[in-house]
Length: 293
Image (tube, rainbow, N blue to C red; front, top):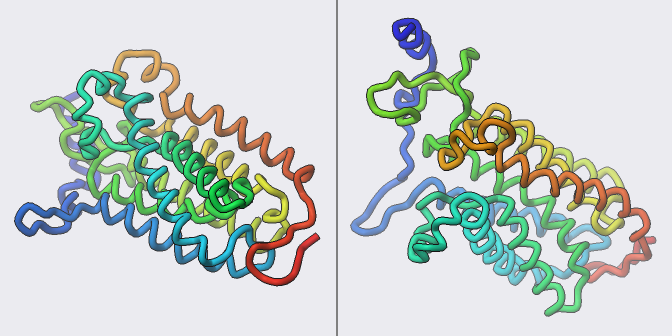
């Protein structure tokens, strides 16, 4: 049995052969990591695409608002993502508060990041007298960039790997089992998420923004985003290894914590989409000159 497992693993791609490393380079005490670069890339590319969206008729804010919005959204992502991770996945950190500040210890929660970003958008909109839900629609359209880069960074880091599998594209990641045991080939679930949450979700939102009137129905685009993410993440969790801290519990044997957190997203997305037509009204854009019925 051991020999068969060893032979099966040897026939698959070895992660160590890909030459990937979490760190890009180090100079003295400074280290640039792919995960940090993923955040930066997601914010920069997202900001660039947001400006493209704001240049279209019916924009909910002006170009001058974009820079401030990026600040509020980034703050929401970082604070919400970290606090969400602590509350959802590692509540024991509350007994050791200093660990909460060590962002590399455990990581971030996307679901927490969504909540944090939403709060940031609401604060920003109220401060500037803008419609927060319409702004959220535009932010939802750029969010897949961050998801795509973030999941690629997870892959480069060799973390959040999938369950053991014998599919031809399975990969043997290091340090997934106790020392001395044979490392099994696993689903590269990080790439599944990059494809579904990043590429596919971006294309869906692109279609609804550019080819339909969805942006004139407040809440519809953000509803499509949270529904799409919830479904994609719920599906990929079937191929993803449960979080180590939940081993042997209900959250590993029956339903993952990530799937539970997706259920309110799916319900909320359906609600926002279903009720969006009733929120449609004449849009007097912040940017541009023509109102849109």
